[in-house]
Length: 207
Ligand code: GLP
Image (cartoon, rainbow, N blue to C red; front, side, top):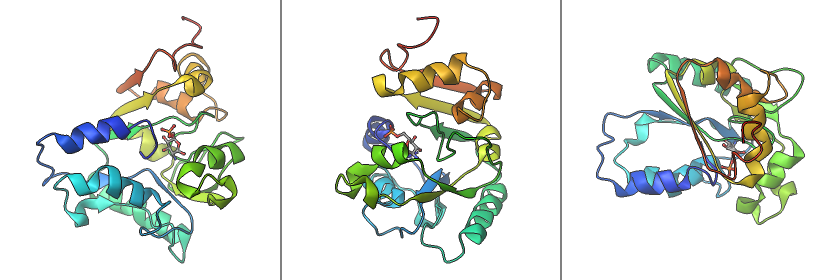
């Protein structure tokens, strides 16, 4: 995942003497229209915060191309590439303040496969930092892994920090499985580790 949440983890991974030569990665999502060289792209974020600090081969980095001419074909290509790699062993995910996971936004329905999704205004606002602080400069849609990719990963580590995630954490852990909180579907996954700080856990019923 991109975002503020995994930055400390990526810094620690970059500083550790780990061998990534046999690792393959697939990022969760990317903004529509943006190429990898755009400074606001998730690819640029990952290059800055992780990829250039580890010995991961460029060919081993799986990423959605936001600037693909045919977004639907690009999403289909991604699902085939993940399957060809043998699926995802370990999926790291963050949590949107509105309960989104990857860019699977809350709504009346969710999608199983990698797909193009319109972004909620709150999500564009939350991502404005890398676009000069102007949320209208944040692309209005994105390409994202779907719920099947998330739920079929063999192990999932979900990270959420800070008070802005408190309501979403409570809905994710204590609420019903609902398309209104895509992260709530992690309750149905057999092997999830939730890494949540006190501020993010503060709205839980159990306290
Ligand atoms: C973004 C990304 C998610 C990320 C989430 C939380 O919009 N699409 O993958 O997990 O929102 O971001 P942050 O960690 O900055 O709060």
